[in-house]
Length: 209
Image 1 (cartoon, rainbow, N blue to C red):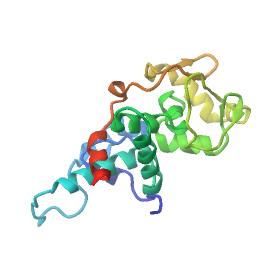
Image 2: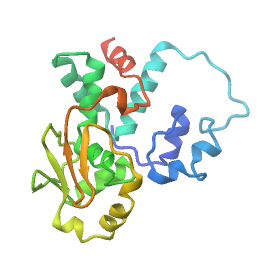
Image 3: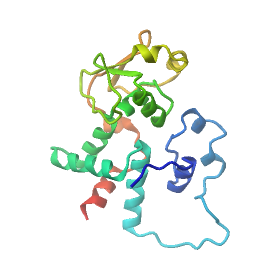
């Protein structure tokens, strides 16, 4: 399945919740979900249909997939990896998604949204443990250091993000030095603090059938 390239605000309306795919716009009055929380499409003659359990499970899976910007094959790979590991599969899946490099860049406040964080990584603006890494799906581990590359520090985006860093909240499982714009993975992501807009257990049920 190809990557979704349509209007991302339609996704929030389709799945009935903010996915924060447009950064600060999602927090402003311009947010499409705030103005039109109904599902996209013609509503006047829409029939009310009973939603099956399978449809609800699919909706949760799609909501998670679009939140992290993954294709179906990628997302299924994360699920299979979570199944092979010890612990609760749903929580393990959520941790694996949170430990993606593009998500960590977003969580550190180096980007306003995950799509923007993915672009920053792709353009070679981020270093992982002192080496430039342009793979957004790269998985970080405890002790890893995430910094801006020399190329990235020369951009206007770096200056803009540095000025607005104080207003952003960084999760406890990450540490950041605002002066040097350097982040570090302190511990594993706490599932309770992630604030996921989907239920990982329902996603496990979807793939288990």
